[in-house]
Image (cartoon, rainbow over all chains, first blue to last red; front, side, top):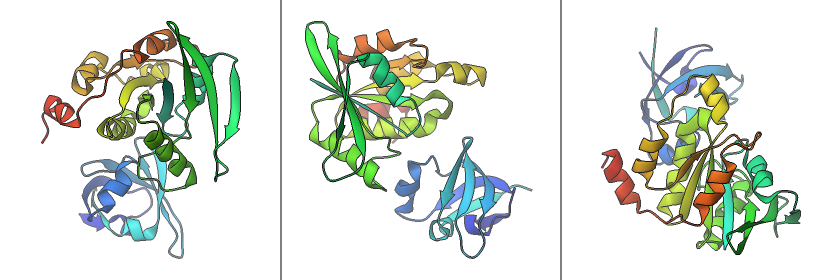
Length: 75
Length: 174
């Protein structure tokens, strides 16, 4: 099932499906790219950032960024 | 000639720096920012080279002050050799930065640091293949124990710049 990264629930994991526009370059340095496996590590309440695990490191992303990344979530 | 040590934060750049330069270390403050970089010297053959420990950066698109310093240093020292230090256990992200630096036209030597930890984690890296694809020297290192540092230093003077197009060709991309 496809979801925005910002809508993923704690503990869910999946594969990056798409990244909007020039955001691709911005997140590439953090190891986030299409077809990369990620896992939701922590989600902060009240429009706070999301923390995801990529290659065993945790990366926090602002909600504005997370909304523009689509994930194919695994069941 | 100058040597710039670049790489992500926490990959062991400073340890590599101390290994290369020994105890002859001075610290200086980069104008306009609070970010420190370190400067030291190493003698390769008959040439005394200045080694600069650049603040860690994830990419060459700066997101904060420290990264701005890193990018500026690279731009101001176009003729220097960049030793790109990569955490072998997180090689993909590191290679992204290495490719960015290669793309800017700098001469690059890649140090695959924390080689021992990668081995412990059963991460196998085909160094020879990586060397062929990138066209630059690639040296596995364990900075904390000093392993590979001698070879790393010996590769610095022979480093040449590589066209990003040829890397793309070697990797079979477009």
